[in-house]
Length: 268
Figure 1 (cartoon, rainbow, N blue to C red):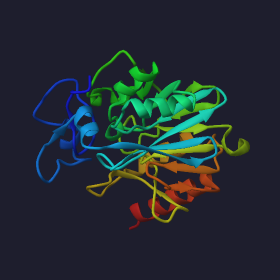
Figure 2 (spheres, rainbow, N blue to C red; figure 1 turned 135 degrees about the vertical axis):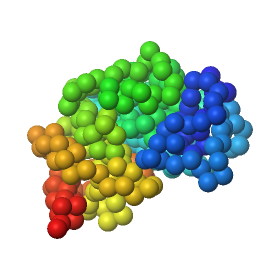
Figure 3 (tube, rainbow, N blue to C red; figure 1 turned 30 degrees about the vertical axis):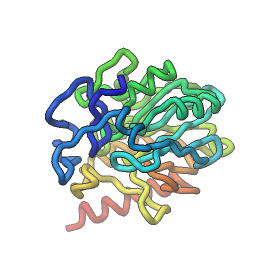
């Protein structure tokens, strides 16, 4: 369905033509300064968008678009012994990109951190015959319902051997991160999108209800996220953009980042 409408600002594909983008009209996002605009996969291809693939870590291949679409995030193809997971999403997809990903082993499962990154997820799911794992708390944000979308509930969900989704609940109620147990020679890795945002000083992460509108996240939400992550060891934290990576001691970086955030949020 290459002519389905895609919001230019957030890059999410909708099932049918409409005047508004609810994802952008929510207070966590914004309508583009030029007003609501639409594109499609056909138009992106015709305007010269191409995929850009590059290694982001051992067993981790970044997938972006040149020029960038939407808010410029990149997806990650996480190549585990149990299968390949596409973590997060970009809007662009064409035959060449399908070929390149196929040469890397294809996709066995898709998981996306939150609605701002839903992109053209159904197109990707159909291209690779892969299920999309989303937390049920974000069900109402799915712009193109499809049988490929699998909703899970609760705090954690293992989607492949050693690959677990955690409902951190930061940014969106269904906001999820992904833990790969065997990454980094068994030291583990966390894939956080911007649920835990890797900041410019890549020794730290931060937590926001809205990044573009600078609305801070609630302390209770951050404490819940830390509690759910406590059992998991991870050396690296992969954020949502190129090279936004905490390279070492990731679990401690998350803990000290939360302590710093909470010390300001609760300061009298």
